Length: 119
Image (tube, rainbow, N blue to C red; front, side):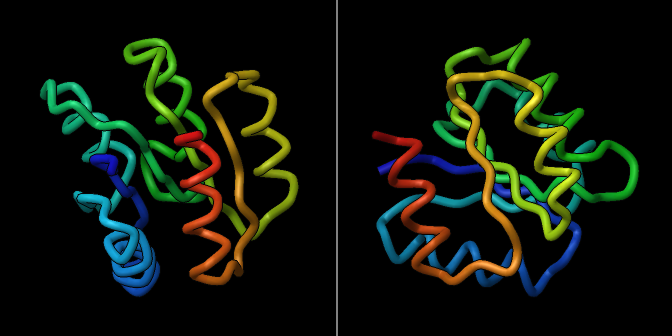
């Protein structure tokens, strides 16, 4: 199972996604924005997956993902958004370790997306 960092400014979404991923046996650490997530990623903890909302105040999920790709090339990334144009911007990062998921999603869709990333 993977150690996952989850960044989302909406507490209800964080709680929902955390429960779904923990049900698959993953360990999930929570952050409420991109800046906090970047600080935690810089701390050296070995995360296997970063799950992030795209639209967050301050450092958004796309910039967070771009920096994560530079600093941790093997990190798997799952970006989520309710806006198709934001997911198009995310896809433009062109990372083989990047996937996107459209909101709203079911718990099973989230779990499947993470399973697919982990291969």
